[in-house]
Amino acid sequence: MSHTVNRRHLVKGAAWAAPVVLATSVVPVYAASCDIRVWEVESQIVATDPDYSNNNYIKKVLYGKGLSEKDKSQEYGEAEMQHWYDANSKKLMWRLHIGLPEGAASGAMITIPVDPSWSNPSAISQGGLELFLRLDAHRPELYSESFPPALIEDRGTYLSIIFAGPIPKGAGAVFTFSADPKGGEEAVLGRNSSTGTGNTYTAKATIEFKKLGC
Image 1 (tube, helix red, strand yellow):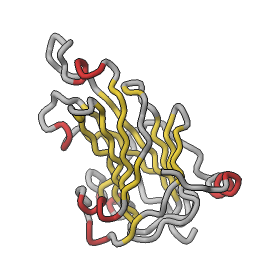
Image 2: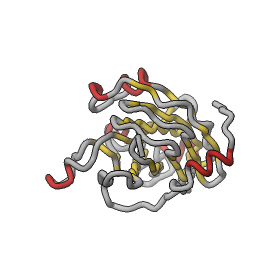
Image 3: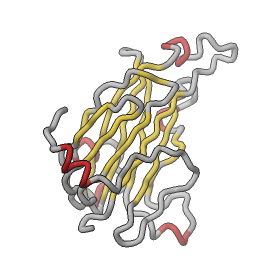
């Protein structure tokens, strides 16, 4: 997907949203007023684990699940990195599932670092509201809009998804890409392991935005 965006205006609008890809154990917290919000999501593919595609979520944003009572009222939205191995294409598949009930101001940015466990990421495809709702939206009643088209780029060491304009309230989207597993299918399925355990493949995403109206 390709969209023409004036880079100077884009950089100016997204100046507050420089990529941050540090992994921490902190769960996203609802930021005060017009502060920048930073969500981090992470998941792993271990194809020999039982029901791995429904598990192996390291970090996700899910309406305060796992947070203290104090923090439950401070988070509003959902995001997770869905994951599976496609045996036909022999590709790792990653799908960032994100919902913003409050929308986001111009300049929102998503960064996905290229992990050492995989290479050659495909171009990211963007799916809209219908796909978001069909693929396990946790609070579907909150969503009625699609994200606007994004500027999507492969920057070598990371993939970037940038929104030059605002994201409307109640917007949901999915962003999907594939990658080659290091070690190939033998490593994914644990065929070259003495224990029969497949290698671990990790994907992370950092989502940075300000509340709509800021």
